[in-house]
Image (cartoon, rainbow, N blue to C red):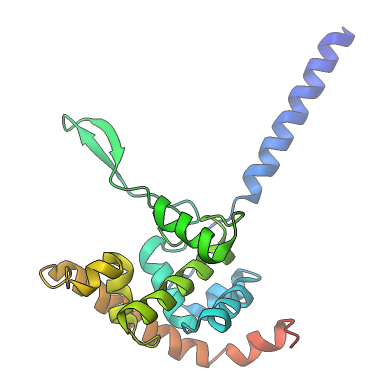
Length: 207
């Protein structure tokens, strides 16, 4: 009887632990089309985005527009699987993962150059820092302005070499997406102007 009680106790404890871990998984914001609502809901995200802006130079609205396009702020987002024989799930189209949809090799490059080996793609602070860092490389290698979301996104999608070769020029769907990202960045910029002072007053920044 004591042995059975011990098993049951441990079983209940395991269920509680699993439930607790599940509850800790970051969920996407409820209102992804309004940057003020995002930062109001997600404690710490504004400070993370501001830190990335200060460190690498890309404005917050552009960083957030990239994240919206790539994952709609889903921390564990992955590309869809291919189909084998039109039925069975096959491999995913790429290794892209997380908020920023960074691929394995690009993330490893970031960790080596800037992020440290503890950085995770499903951590918002690390992901937004990655986007800002990548844009800073686009600025240095391709001469793209850090206030130019359209061309920054093309370089983000095609890579720095691909952007130099203009591989996007025959991809109308991609230039359309880049225009959408640029438009969302402008919208986020207008929205942020109405709440940034309040967000700043809620933060703890010491210089």
